[in-house]
Length: 148
Ligand code: FES
Image (cartoon, rainbow, N blue to C red; front, side, top):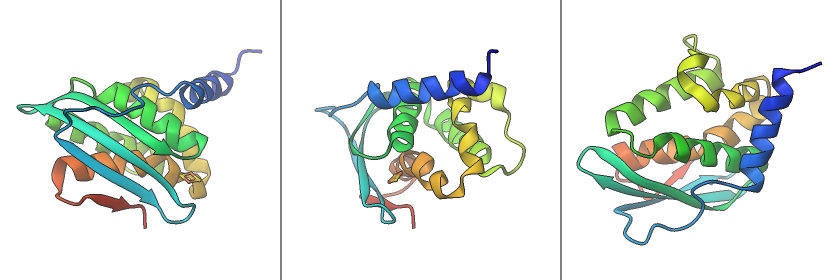
């Protein structure tokens, strides 16, 4: 019988094996590093903005399947978004993954495949590593973001 969880699992595996937007953007105007000290995984986020929009976004580095799949899905979702919409999406995804404030899964599109992570608290930081890195790239002036 068809199980939506199997489909979600397949999408996560696909984004880990063939990550979208993986690599360097040569003319990025922001480069910020995210670090999970619990496991030592690091990823770098490259951001190119035009006015108030994210014109291009990519990542590289190494991480577990969840962190790579999350970065792949996030960069796909963020390309072309305004900074304001990116922040709204950050908040919705954070609600989804921490199970706070009743996240609207439908508004998250493909990102909803990561909803199951909330049942595994140790993996929440894996899924949110790239998101906190982007949040800091947009709002702050740190060059490195830690999940701790
Ligand atoms: Fe390191 Fe997931 S185990 S980010």
